[in-house]
Amino acid sequence: MSKTIIISNRLPLQLEINNNSINTIPSVGGLATGMKSVHSGSDSIWIGWSGLTEEKLDPEKRNLVQKALKKHQCVGVPLTESEIDGFYYGFSNNTLWPLFHYFMEYTEFDKDNWETYQSVNQKFADVVIENLGENDTIWVHDYQLLLLPEMIRKKKPNVTIGFFLHIPFPSYEVFRTIPCREELLKGLLGADLIGFHTYDYERHFLSSAQRILGLEINFNNVLLENRIVKVDSFPMGIDYDKFHNAAKIHNEKEKKDKTEIQQKIDEHLVNGDRAKLILSIDRLDYTKGIANRLRAFEYFLDKYPQFKGKARLVMLAVPSRSNVPQYQLLKNEIDQLVGRINGKFSEVSWTPIWYFYRSMPFENLIDLYTSSEVALLTPIRDGMNLVAKEYIASRVDKKGVLILSEMTGASKEMSEALIINPNNFEEIADTLKFALEMPEEEQIKRNTALQKRLKRYNVEKWANDFMESLETKKNSAKKYSLK
Ligand code: ADQ
Figure (tube, rainbow, N blue to C red):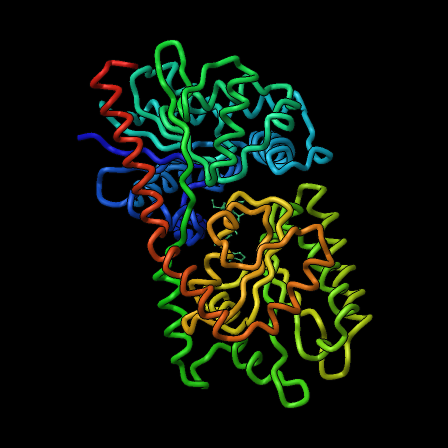
């Protein structure tokens, strides 16, 4: 029987070792949810790192981990601390992440990290080959594994491989600056189908393949000597019903059943009214434009002082990659900005910014999505941005205004949102005023269209579309023996 092999840097679960037993906590992130329809039944396995470095495991624990993973149809790739340093923190997050998000000044190229990236990709390839059966289909995810398709193909020339990139693919002029540009492109071109969130990323990739490797492009196909690689866009959706239904249940709750956070929000009145909430949620990452957002909000309060006491920014930032130096600097910058802005404008009954630096359980995310009149998402670059979609899905009464950066993949599909340039404070301030004063009928009109699209193109549809396209490729390759 043939199966699907999903491969990502991290497995879709977390492991906790307690003495001699292992707890598995399934991840609730976008990818894990998105792949649910593919990773179900007995015909799929997921290969990735378990989150525990080899140094933390003696032979007995290693055995326990393997058993625990097997129960969830997962297979671990064993990685050491120094491999994680060079491959994950080093090359993936200090080289590829900033470069692909156009932060060239943050992009470091370290030869040792590049070597570790190659050897770890090879380790992944070895585990895949060990688990590969006749006629299996492979789906590789994201920028940590760009070399994997070619490494697998070298050993198994006829296997069907799909690859999806969750972050932007930068323009040729940016991509060409990386020394190992040829190796990265060749690595990806080991796949039969390469998917991106948007048509722009697809176009950038095709132009790099053409100009760097001199390959022939026919529409969205890259013509290799003995194979054709299809390149296409598949904008990722969310589990719409999960957010919409949770918001519905939330709205119907009696006061006493509401979470503590929700009760506090409801009771926090300024001169008898609740200040309107402007929400932002992201991982604490320099690509997300958090410092820009704070400066723009400060400018907004200076320009439109009538909103003092009437509007408040609720900013939720999830700790992320906190041992990479740029992230530590960013955290300090944000702490200082929040302190300065709150110091400048606060009144006894009102502080302009509520800032939370932590991850929140799903229930509290729903509290914030449903309570906020406006969502202000200002990434400098973002592959897609699922928060924008989750906010709209949670607005059961269809009220609420989404302000969204034009630098996100999501803005391409969500044209009814108020689209802004994250570097233009004037525009953000004016758009905030416009959003806070938007008549309800207009909010409902915009959100009706957005919700309809998000419900239809949900994450399950995204995964199925990709798999169908890959199957079609597999069948046509067989028919014409193109491989
Ligand atoms: P991320 O950069 O992580 O993903 P995003 O798409 O916004 O960005 O997804 C974040 C997810 O984390 C959302 O589902 C959100 O609900 C959750 N989350 C955020 N803050 C949280 C908090 N404080 N507590 C709990 N949960 C929180 C990468 C790319 C994106 C791309 C996705 C999917 O960078 O551009 O959209 O992959 O491909």
